[in-house]
Length: 262
Image (tube, rainbow, N blue to C red; front, side):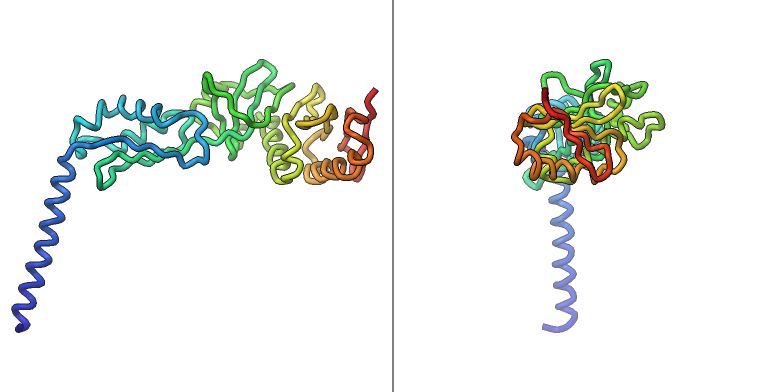
């Protein structure tokens, strides 16, 4: 086979590939969508199930079964989905089988705050406000007591504002700091159920088991204070029983002051 013929055959092959690609793209874009497949990036979805996400998409598109793929605005679907204060990110695309693939990342609540006015909201793992959702209760540690929430709280929740951007909400920043410090200590994290802020604006940690409370005071020397909780369980409680103490004062450096139950 001479050189010229080889070149011609390769050109014909290339043209066929390009033409085939154009034809496939044209026929694919003009075909009707089939079904919606929803998946969640989170290990566990908290606010929505598959059917709820599908319903939201159908409201935007009317029905993917009656529209050509090229007529469905994927970016608009993503934009509409993340308008929800519970959805952090949405990735929407069509598969080769013409199924609409929807990957949802919800905000991940790590603590629930109940302020002094009984207003309730969640904080995401990065300190972002998340509103409560009617009919849904998420099993996370609760922070309650003498907490003054910032002004325009509803707006902060609706737009997923981060506490780091707020100027006059030191109490929330301290709450989140205490949460992070507890979370870093796996043993203590497994013991603590609630966080209470008393009238003196001091932090009290309430364990899952037992009638005692841990008085942290302010957020200074948090790492040392959290470490002392482990010492209390492994050394003091082990030798004295669960009901001997009611307040475990951790405010003082290098000390654990235990107040006995009456």
